[in-house]
Amino acid sequence: MNLGPAAALLETAEPDERPRRRPALSPSRAGDFKQCPLLYRFRAIDRLAEPPTRAQIRGTLVHSVLERLYELPAPERRPAAARALISPAWAELCAQAPGLLGELFDSTDDPELPGWLESAGELLEAYFRLEDPTRLEPEARELLVETELDSGLLLRGYIDRIDVAPTGEIRIVDYKTGAAPRVVAEARALFQMKFYALALLHLRGAVPTQLRLLYLADGESLTYSPDEAELRRFERTLDAIWVAIRTAGRTGDFRPNPSRMCEWCSHKALCPAWDGTPPDYPGWPGCSSHQYEAVLPTSDHAGFTGPTKPIAQKDTPRA
Image (cartoon, rainbow, N blue to C red; front, top):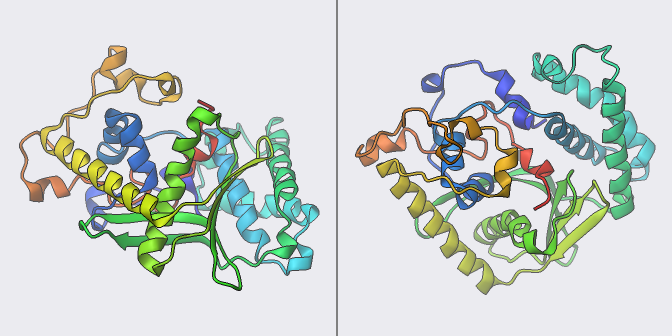
C-alpha cells in the first residue's frame, strides 16, 4: 500500500545513507515548480517535513480501499464490500506508520476517529455513483511508470489505474478525494494526467484515448482526450521545466511566487514573501554539476521517505 504523506513517519535512515536513484521529474514536483520555485526547493531539495493532515491520510486510505476493491471478484465489488475494507486498510496503514495515529488523533478512543473513518466511507459511496466496478477489469493499479524522453529527462510517477479495452484503447484514471476544480483550474488538474499520458506514449507507443479524473468529494468527473501533437508539445514543456530547475539549482535562485495557494503552504514561516528566512541552500550556488546531482529529486515522493506515492494533491483546495 502506498502511504503518501504517512511515509514521513517511516524514516529508517539518514538521507545520505539512502541509496541514490537517478534524478527524475514527477508530476508533483513539476507542478510544484510551476506553482512556486521556492516550494519546489523546500520539498525536493531541502526535503522539509510536512506533517500529514487528516484529509491527506484519508485520501491515502480511500486509494488503498479502491486498490483492494479490484482484488475482489467482479460481482463482489459493491459499496458494502468497499466499506468493509476501510478497517483493515486503516489498520495496515497504522502498522506501517506506527506514529501516524498519534499524529492525527489522541488515541484509538478519540471520539473524532469514527466520524473520520465514516467520511472515508462517504467518499467511497460517491465512487460507486461515478463508476460500476463490477463491469471493469483494470490492467494495472498503482502502476509505477518510468521513461526517458529524447532529451534525456527521466519521468517517474504512479498511475492510479489503467484500463485497456479489448480493441486496445487505453484509459488513464485518477482518483481525487477533493472537489472538482473550477474551469480556470482545469488545466492544472490535467497537467498530471498529460504527464502520465506522455509517459505511456513513450513506453507503449500509443496515445491514451481518454484521461479521466474522478472527484469523490462532489461526485463529479473530468474527461479529456489528448492527441499526439499535444503530448509532444507537452514534452517540450517538461523539458523546459527541467532546464529551469537545473538552472535554479546551480544558482540557488528559487524565487517565491506568492498566490492564493500560499494559504495552504506548510512553509510560510520560511518564505521571504512572508518575511521568513529559508534554510541554508544545500546545493550551494556555484556547485559543480556532479555536486548538484546529489540534491536533485530522485522520485515522485521527494521530501518523503519510503517507496511510496504522495497523495497530498488529492485534497488540494479549489482554486
